[in-house]
Every structure is written in C-alpha cells, then in structure tokens.
Image 1 (cartoon, one colour):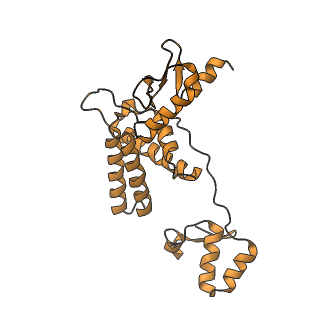
Image 2 (cartoon, rainbow, N blue to C red):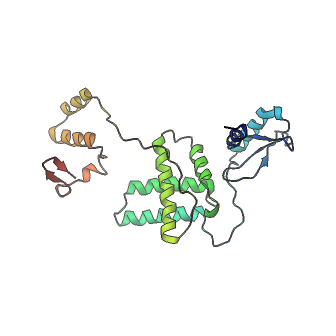
Image 3 (spheres, rainbow, N blue to C red):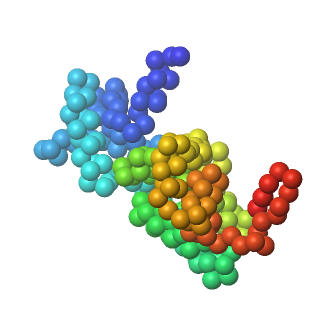
Length: 239
C-alpha cells in the first residue's frame, strides 16, 4: 500500500499538514473542506515539525463542540435530519398506542434519535453521509458496548429507511457498517442456577428456568406469554 493511501486515512479525524502553505488543517466530518488549525494565540500553526501543537489545537476544536458537520445552503423544502428523526419518533409513538411497538423500543428510539439531532439535526438529508454517523457513534463515549453502538446504528438506518419508503426521501446511508451481533450467553454457572432454584418456590423457579434457557426478557416478553402462545409438539413446547 502506498504512503499516499496511508496518509489519506490518517487525515480523517486528525490534523494534517499541507506542504503548499506549510500550514496545519483538519477536515470536518462528512466534508472535503480544509479548515486551518489555530494556536492558543489565534495564529495559524505552520511548520511540519509542529504536529503536536496541531493535534492539541484539533483536540480543542473537538472539546469545544465544533467538530460537527455544517449544512450547506439548500432548497427550503428539502428534508432535514431532524425531520426524519421526528417522523420516525412519531411513527413509534403511534405504534405504542396501537400496541404494535413496545414502549421500551419507542423510548430507545426517542433517546437515540434526539442525540443524533443534537449532533446534526439541521443537516439536509442529501448532505448526510455515512462518515457523519460513524463519527457521531464514535463520539458517544458512554457507549462502551458494541451492542449499544450496533443498536443505535440499526435505529438510525430504520428511521431513514422509513422516510425513504414512506416519503421517498433518498439517503446515502446504505452499506453503513454495524458492529457484529453478539448473542446473549448464559449468566449463571450450573451450580449457581441450582442454588437459585433451591432458594425459591416451584412456580417462580419454573419462570426463572424459562427466562434463563430461552433468552426471553422476564417482564416485557416472558411474563406476557399465555397458553394460547404455546404449541405442544413432539419436540416439546414451542412458541
């Protein structure tokens, strides 16, 4: 791989030097613009040897909340990211009322999409790129689990696909990569599981056994099962 290719990847999210002006710049997420980096004295940082000063200047930009995409002029009737998010949040609200969408899912959609709107809600959908979403996800420092990041990306894709299917709002997020799925694994050792059954009555023990061995969430899924939801077959009980 050429040195030029490696340099192109390093410039994403980091400071880069432009030999023509001998100055340091950064490229805002989702754009191809170059923005000069300034020292604490307000002057442009120059000199290839001043990489550390340039990286510190870029860190100040990010901490100040300026590391966000800027919307370019567009037609007044064009859909904004906030409009897509608002429409899907409202769709989920109606789904909860009609009992086709769970309350927990609707709440998670609202939380996730409101955070996205804080980042780039005023950006026209036509200007939104996969790079914007990738940087937004990386910037959520509280999202340590890949499952959390995967769920957030899934919600965003679902919202924009909903706008595309219902209102013909075209977007450029197709192919946005998500962290790999991770199935829920057992939570207890066999000895711990037996100890739990010994410490409770038979009915609640059966409930815990079903929760542990099916992966169903205790109250929003398992507790809502009735006899009408189960079929008895030669392989056992099936939902």
